[in-house]
Length: 124
Image 1: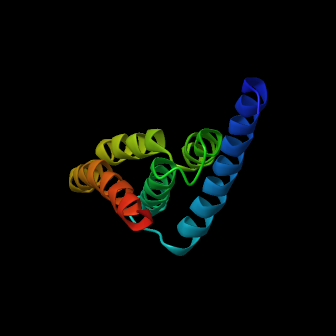
Image 2 (image 1 turned 30 degrees about the vertical axis):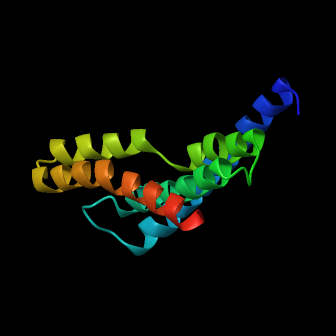
């Protein structure tokens, strides 16, 4: 695959990941109405786990460099959303829900990293 085709494919995979995030977000929000942003948090945890698996597969040379880019940068990059998590933390703070904002900030920094490591461990 040449560089232009790979770039376009990564963009397409990012679009697919974004659409999937939008759909999953809607399903979760329709079922759980809480102060804590369950949808974004769940999406980022899932993306972290999948990213760890993809990283392990790439490290073991089970997937190629282009496949790694399509999955990790494209699909999972489009699916996960750190910027939305940060915006939700600011919104919680503005609503004076400081405990929820603080817990969410802590959990958003720790849990995705832990799930990436777990995914890597599972796939090895």
